[in-house]
Image 1 (cartoon, rainbow, N blue to C red):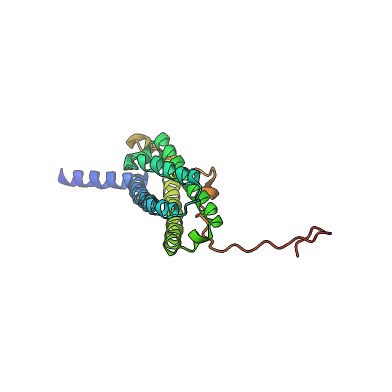
Image 2: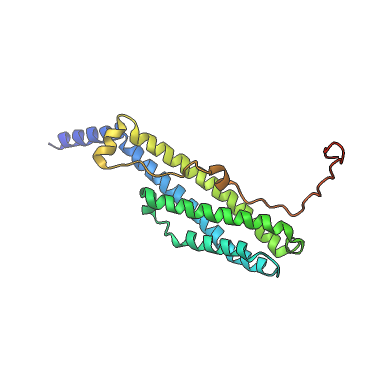
Length: 210
């Protein structure tokens, strides 16, 4: 009897391995780890925003609307609880992505506007914050790409035969992923440029730039 049970257990183990069960387990762990890194980097960025806003406020004539957009975008982004369950909820995941994308856009506009304030750009504290923000955006891009790859691999397993049969039996479902809509814009770090090259005058007769 013991030998029979041992053989049965071995056969069951091999069956599960062959049908992709273990692949699902590995894939889920990779997704969880990748998601944690995404969340950590987004939180790192959110933590930088208050100091950045306070520094920019020191420029008396700085556009208040731009700061307000950043503050509101940060508030919406941090109001969404990025729990592990979120990666299994397409609607919640989309809201999270949209909120983070809005903050990325607001920060990018902020960086562009600061080009008009030489005193602000000369502020060492501001320059340090810009450098930290750029580094964080780069880390976000790397973390997002790793998550995207992990989910893509997992979803292929969910939809492929014969592992799709295992997915149906054990309830493994495809997970939502970052969409490609505006991916280039969302993933692009805010530009950090402290000096603007002066425009070259155009030739009055030909209209060409000299």
